[in-house]
Length: 406
Image 1 (cartoon, rainbow, N blue to C red):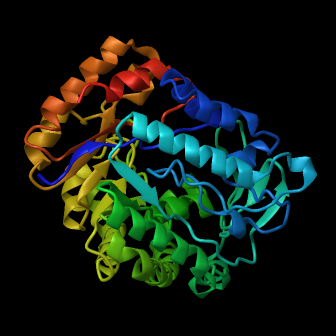
Image 2 (cartoon, rainbow, N blue to C red):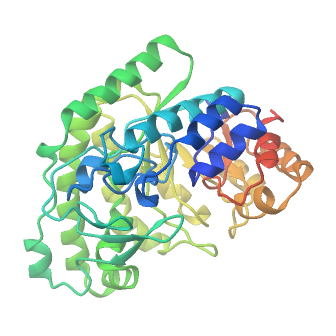
């Protein structure tokens, strides 16, 4: 793969993270504007809870999906006085701030789209810090993330799984998707940015683990394969409908599209290569093939952790770009990755967020960027980015150092 070279912001967690970066860049006016907008609950600022207080999580979907589109904000809606300025004002201020930061850092990528609003019998707001999503997964705000506190299919029987109602893709908000398509078209026709169409569906493994619990679902892959096969079939039916309605609109205007599903831990893959090849790869082959009926975009897959042993299968199932390339995970040596797979896949990420960006000095960051450039970026095929979304404990000067080398 030699087609890509550039840099992306990937993402950030927490508004103060982005505000701090902006101030360090001298973007005082944009940072002040974002700082003045306050009063919305923490979970609303995370893009998870509806700012209106309605029992309608589906109407607020669409902030950062965990991959690359950190600047996208929830649907703009007015909020009650108790919510202060409202999510609409927050969205506008944050979008302006993100764009100012991306311009200052000379970021080559712009994200569009995400998870469309969709009707669901399960989605509801429990409180300002707790929500049930469209698949019945209950999450609670813990300060930086919405952590799962209840999995609706944990311990379920096969009959209960078969009876469980997944959302209907036919109820997806096509007006929202059309608006994203217009945004992508404008970017494609009026700028030279690489347009990234964010994925509209979850990954098959991650959703199974969220809906059943990790230990429950991973154990059933071996002990109750008929259960997990049924789950994958039901979810693929949902994916099929959503992919058609989404990419038929955005597909012509995007350069890259994405998926997210963590296959790796710090020390190796979640599944053996054989089990992955048998249980997970076929569903991604179908998803990617279906996506490519609507778009010529490159397909990028996000998986954290140690995944070198899965790379032949990721490439085989149609993945063009690997994100985020975590250098401190087992076997994720840049020189080995490039030598073995650099002709077949682009690497996106690689700058160590956990150690170098958080604890290092700007000189350490500069050295890490040069190493990534000289190994992963040899002869092209590399996109500079951190190995995870930028966290609140990353000093702004290290972010500036990361983007000041290339």
